[in-house]
Image (tube, rainbow, N blue to C red; front, side, top):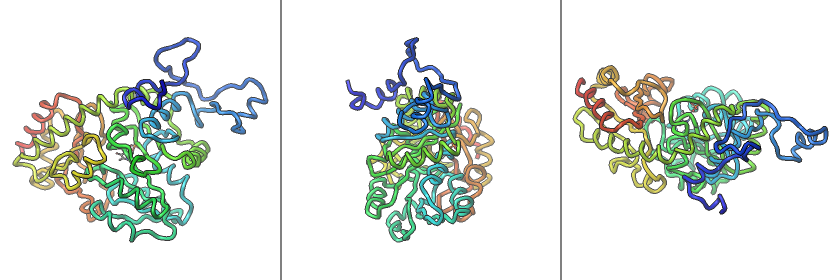
Amino acid sequence: MSLKSLNFETQAVRTQTDKTQFLEHSTPMYLTSGFVFEDAEEMRASFAEEKERNLYSRFSNPNTTEFVDKICKLEGAEDGYAFATGMAAVFSTFAALLDAGDHIISARSVFGSTHTLFTKYLPKWNIETSYFRVDEVDKIESLILPNTKIIYAESPTNPGVDVLDLELLGAIAKEHNLLLVIDNCFATPYLQNPIKFGADLVIHSATKLIDGQGRVLGGVTVGKKELIREIYLFSRNTGPSLSPFNAWILSKSLETLAVRVDRHCENALKLAEFLESHPKINWVKYPFLKSHPQYEVAKKQMKMGGNVVAFEVKGGVQGGKTFFNSVQMCSLSANLGDTRTIITHPASTTHSKLADEDKLVVGITDGMVRCSVGLEHIDDVISDIEQALEKI
Ligand SMILES: *Cc1c(COP(=O)(O)O)cnc(C)c1O
């Protein structure tokens, strides 16, 4: 039975590192910083990369390798490298692949820290970024410069849950010989595989739905072997690697990803449908609601709509404040993809560093709420949100 032909759920459960002499059923934790060699020749050959094996856990470790192998199978990728956080994955990917003076084209709507990377840090190496709005994908080609190297996007976006046509991005990147890098955090490998649509690299913050229980941080980049090689060499020397402990947790988490995400999506759709007809709501956005501007694209490239619902409560700043202060069960937190339903106010927290006009362009208004729908009974989540809306 070839593992390659197996289905998603089976790959997520059955991809494991080799057993030790104890024949344990579940992969143990390999909490070791280094590995020993038989003799001087083996040590030399290992460091010269003539022999593939673990040397030091900054380079690789059986737990991180298992986690990366799973993500590669689930995303249909050739190779990958695991990082301590999603942001370490984003930064290391850019740092490894870009030279001073290169140019990036990015969707305007990206995770807050990624935005800070583009505006504050990459310019230190004279790497500039041009932006396109999610509803202006047709303008991307006009932004291409002779030094453009990467097209970067998230889909669905954080926090506006806009959806970008990955097939179209893939075609543009291919035609102009650019790398397409997709942050697939909101979709997880279960709902969407950007490589199928032409992405060269896929990045995840494993902190979110991959862990799924709000416990550990982690990140991963997977994709073309020759690109991962560059990312690996950069990372093995600069040290953003994932800890074996976190890798062990994240690999276990992947065993239940499909089952969890099925329920997350079912719950999120129910909440979105409830909010759509509520009188205290100005608008609600969820990829699998027919009213979503990119509903058809979402249906084409995603299995389900994900667990994040964005909406705007009536009454502006005051309405938002009342809503956040009235919620009883849902957590007020900046994280997402947890078993616990979380509501966030992007304007004052995760995206507060954006200029007011940038906030508006990416759809962040004062009354906007980002809800990461959890695994509680959905009736209880809806009741809590309903009673808070009544206070507005
Ligand atoms: C959270 C997040 C990140 C950053 O991940 P960390 O693990 O918090 O560093 C990157 N991209 C998206 C879309 C995210 O939601």
